[in-house]
Length: 249
Ligand code: ADP
Ligand code: MG
Image (cartoon, rainbow, N blue to C red; front, side):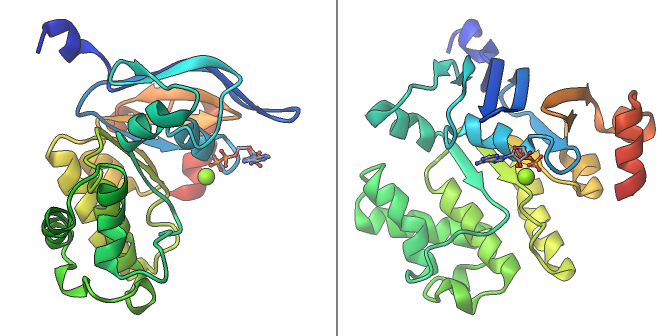
């Protein structure tokens, strides 16, 4: 690999604007996330955090600007979009598993359909991933038979099965009972330690301090602060961030 390729940011968001009708939800956002970096995004409800994730995964279109994953601009639609989207794994607050399929089938579906992996190979790889997130023994069950924490770990395994270059997490532990938060954060911490590039919307301070290289604070559709976890939590620069931290800490 050439040096230039290594320097290409894994995620590049350039001058992105997004409107919902008259509502300006993302305002001229510029963001570069280098390979292997873990970014925690926080900010008040309605500040645009989920929309930022969704435009990076192209679940939402943008009104202006551009987004590139590992140097490849997000195409508008079609096969190229499907391929590029496979590079970006996403885990949502609501685990979003297919209810009528087993956990194993949830994980193998994408590789078989999109990556064209053979069924046996897909199952083998899926079992390794379920092992890695600690729920191999749940493979033949249906989502409703699992706890929330187990379902969210299954959702992470399903995303990883696509061999993404980037993982986006949108409040992955917000819907969980408190005693299940850590088992999900531990899986995420492990991924971070292995060098996965991650954008994580989360208000879990422990995770941010332990795993994040960088914290973005969003307010009113803008990145209001971009700093290290230590700097942000100890001495936020803006009054908006100070107010926010006062409410969640
Ligand atoms: P956050 O994740 O930070 O809470 P969101 O990105 O979900 O914020 O939302 C940002 C703003 O955009 C909010 O005002 C929200 O109501 C609005 N919004 C989000 N999705 C839609 C949509 N599909 N249609 C209209 N407005 C939306
Ligand atoms: Mg949100």
